[in-house]
Image 1 (cartoon, rainbow, N blue to C red):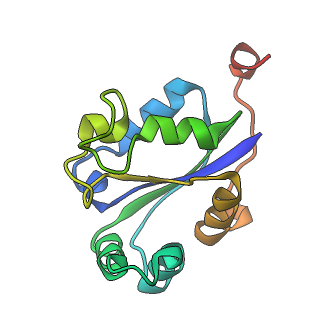
Image 2 (cartoon, rainbow, N blue to C red):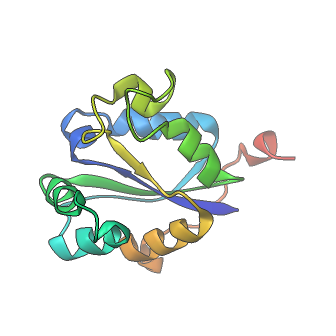
Length: 149
């Protein structure tokens, strides 16, 4: 089973959308294996966004992510990385399809509610950055045989 990292950003937490995000992933059939609400340190934020370090928006990303609590999650399932990205929608909520999280709830590109890993390799790095092994639970839902062949 594949895993992905999902984060409800400060705007999503402030707007009480944590439950909505969790509900969508549960209804899709994915398994929640890690969950925590936290205030992000500057160091963690900079590590998370280090791929953007040389871009002009890096400082704004860091400042935003440390401005209020976030909800960090790890979800598990077949092709969960690609599927989660489709569920999340385009980075810019204006161009995100209706029915996606950003399309339904996003306001603008700077307040797009949610982050999701963009590749299996990225997911592995992000999960290791945000969670220790002891914070992740391996388990199988009883519904699993009804979801996967």
